[in-house]
Image: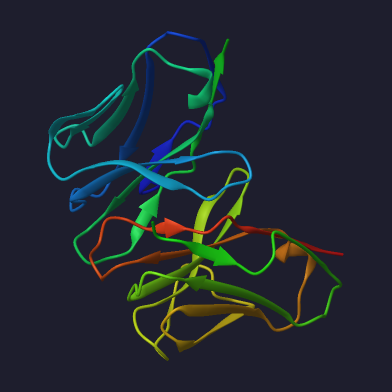
Length: 110
Length: 113
């Protein structure tokens, strides 16, 4: 079983819709959970991070972690064409390396 | 703002050539990383360094070596380039071991013919 699984998409949704991006993981020792956004021909950039189970909100973005189900989500409200990018989930155990998901390609249709 | 720069955006090399990819960060970060990113395989860690002259193998170090002579600079070396090393190479840095955040450069698209 892979440590982190993420549907590669592509996911196409109309502008203004709520987007849900998800990852599952197998290692219960993961402590930090991150979402990176990568625009075409650019490097990934950190979008959000959480440390524990629950929700964390930042503007139109909400990160959700359910440790009991080993499931993390990123919700984007009022999606915009500028949100079109690849979204990578990532997680780590304390001082260990970061494990990245393969990324989900998202297209927001005007 | 943290800035991570990579020496080339696009590079074309021939099989068997020695290739140097350079990465520089300007925020005095302790840790630096080299990844390659391929469709369907995601980001894979090649090597990382947590201090000057220190290096650790990542998940796919075969065919690569690294050098970190100065804190701000981390070089990836392909001793004898092969076609299966055609990929996007991404450099990243993080402030300290255990930091959840990595700052990425723009990437180098390497094609080996």
